[in-house]
Image 1: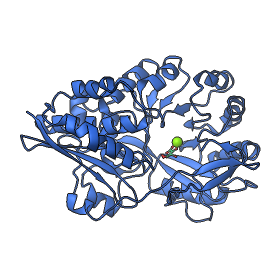
Image 2: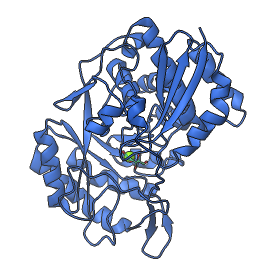
Image 3: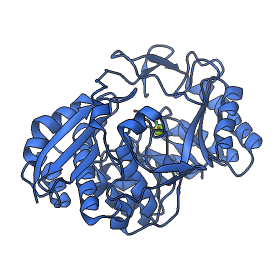
Image 4: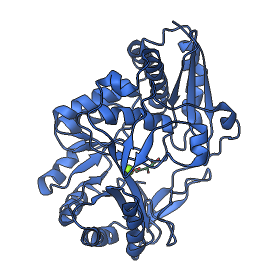
Length: 408
Ligand code: KDG
Ligand code: MG
């Protein structure tokens, strides 16, 4: 069996999805997602210029050897652009494998460990009352877990994942449009004084059963993160995400010495080498890698197994950054993983997205039910794809009030 051709598509409804389609001499094709938020043309170019010409003629069933060939064979290894491109190839090869076997991927991993995987939604508000409305909306829809972000009184601008105006919380997605980044102004003191009380109020309002998550988005220094983690303990969070930038991984020891709030980290990690220390030292409780950014199903399955040895559960990234193909790869892992924790969920469900990526994966009452179709269980409509073109975007940047550049 041989790979005969592969194509890359960039575009989508309100989002530059990078979709790879690998064709074979037996008519079976595989699909993968290489979307790297706001850098979409880069994995696409790597695929088109180098990886696809090297794929043609290979046996698509040899997904492990093909992964090693690209990763080890590159000499300059890793990085988000390369790993997203390998991620798409690996997903597509597993898709082909599942279709050849006539089985959904979760069966090839070891079968289902659960019926329905718990997901969390994003609630947000320009202020705390606005956020309460947004949380109530998701609770009414049956979500059991909600990430909560809100405006901070006196903060010079809207902070991470927070709308400028009230009423947007049910459908708000951060504005990444335009090639020049928007600027957010950040004040750590105001955030640290306000947010613990706000989280405690949310807990009081919604009671003990709702799983509440909060994302600090890398904004605190290690000592501040330790103080903040201790201060939010009364709210009984499901997790506190990215309290610090995780490059300095030993710094998390300080937080661990002062607080027991569960910690989730990893959405910007590209490989097992970015997270093995955090996992082995048991400095985190949830690993947040995404199948696209971390190089595909093959390496992420290894991360999941390593995490399981250290009581670390999965909490795969699922921001709108990922196409339904990455979300499907994660859904199959979620159905199987003995150490599944939760799945971030935003991407599926709009009519335009469903038309581009038809599937029968479904969300019900806050649980994701994986499709039983062979492979990933998601198709790609090329006629629909022709309607979209690439539009450049950029993540905002963050500055302190005096102009100092900070972590987004
Ligand atoms: O591209 C950046 C987004 O994916 C990120 O800001 C989302 O932090 C995020 C999250 O937890 O979903
Ligand atoms: Mg995050």
